[in-house]
Figure 1 (spheres, one colour):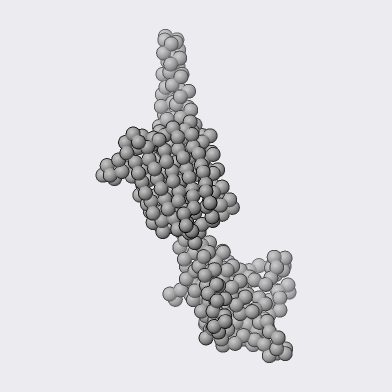
Figure 2 (cartoon, rainbow, N blue to C red):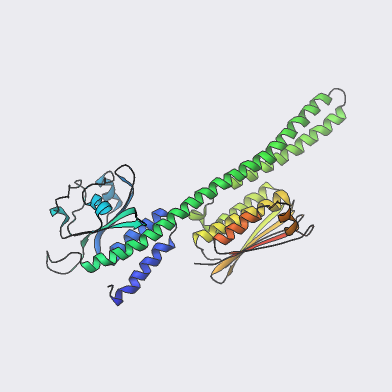
Length: 378
């Protein structure tokens, strides 16, 4: 059993694992937590591939320079293979085990060893191991205990859950990106391509009228200029939406502010942004806020022909509220649903629900639209 004095540390480690959503971050958190909790000098976690090696290998206790000097990632052999196929391994000295096959010259010296597979529903997701337990006993009297093995087994169970969740999250993000690109491709085809087609026909008409009706030819050229400006606006907007959200690097507030500034420059409508007291949110909530804001801005500028759009983000308890309001043509939400034209409302509601949030839509013909999304905090 875990001593009562260590329960707080174990709880903190488990919470840290489940706060992360990126696979690489989850792996690093698992390794660091295991090393600290079991007081080991070294820790590592390998995610196996299907070719006898490891797709990812994360270490703790080794500097970047030392890791680079060690060389290529290890293969699935020796003790590492035993962990993946035979279960937990606890050894007084890994070098004395007949399965030990040595290591590169730059590799640190490992002695006492504790290894544990990370498995979910029979599938081995990784191999977690620790080496060289810290202690103050005389030389030769140290080593990992049965209690250490029990604790590492507990960590491995929760690590499997965290790693599976992170994989699902990354797959969902990939699907979201594919969906976003597909939507933008449709927008390009439906809007920009049509305008370019009209532009070509109008230019041809102007060329045919130059000699016999210069006045009408001049009018047609003005129409060419107008269509060209609209096509340029459509292209700029599409490019903005294709740009990857810089949430990881810049955070939600900076990313939203940049999006609004670019749209304000690209469109004749006035687009503004205001923020109040917002703290960093979990990754899923920040992505939902950004995507809902993008969809609402898209509707206001491209469908509602708004002259003014205001985006606000403010703190509400531990979470935040996004509000996008415009003075555009508005619509009747019920009739839009009946007609099968969702204007992205289904997508926005799905994003809100996926982030544990709540979406509110207020609109009426001729009275503009207000989209409000409230999301919880961490």
